[in-house]
Image 1 (cartoon, rainbow, N blue to C red):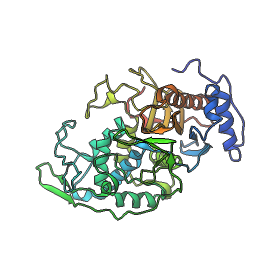
Image 2 (image 1 turned 90 degrees about the horizontal axis):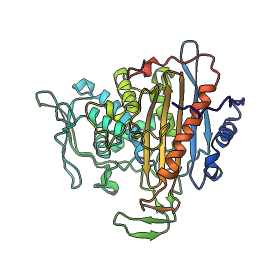
Image 3 (image 1 turned 120 degrees about the horizontal axis):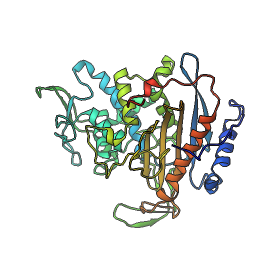
Length: 414
């Protein structure tokens, strides 16, 4: 698949323990000369990269070596990447409700008790025409559906979400905007009544209207971006946009959440996420699936091409991916000139695997909200070529034990 792009023996020997930053810095600058302006001006382009090397022992258990490039706590807009922790916590909450007979496919109706809330009682994209948490998560992870995220966020609740994330060690994550513009400001944290129904349509459980008490301060002092900004009505204002009341998610936290999801079965008990095997497999499958592989929901290929939402390895649209042994299990974000991808990349045929996350800001005008960004010209090609560089390095890297990847082969690769 990637002929002509190999490193042709470019293998570097570094001390993995003490030179992690210099290793990745050298690798990127040597193999990505077309992006020298980006790599030499990481603050302008807000480039961050986290790469995790995976090593297996003779029993196939994984250990991790992490490398970073320009990783910091400076603000970048996480966009749809917040759907990963929202989906994760939603599955955890479902497990707590299991004793009430509630699962992934249980019908879930959303009421409207507040002026901006949406009453949802049907979903024609499901097999039974009823909404469910499982189907919302499919939409979120398959095609980054914002409405599905909003409904899932309403089920989880602002307070529950942050308490869970804090307990998992992610104290700096802030998700107070559910990606539904109809509920502005603090009203976004008010969640409507929700009903779960049995097959005979009796109510199994009612979750009441909830007013959030969450008032944690923003974890960084300066969350302003841009030289100018444009409001929803198209009016331009001088000065940067202040994202202090927007979502915040550090790239390293996002990367670590993906690592803990993907490698749930390889972690020590204290680091392991509380996901059942069924829910783990469900989530991993949605992260790696292509839109054409989904029966419910069904997605038209003209709109949802094969590489939709796969920035790493593919970049811009690839209509049809044929006979590919590579799978990208990922979450992406794209807004205000920010592009983010966070992924576990695996090649079943060549026994390649790695974790990679990166963000880049491609807004040469530096006007937030203009809608004019260099996604196609710079951002997507950079993420594609960055991931291919890591892929090629990993394909040539000596490994004492080649990985057995059967647990991730959820799509029948032979």
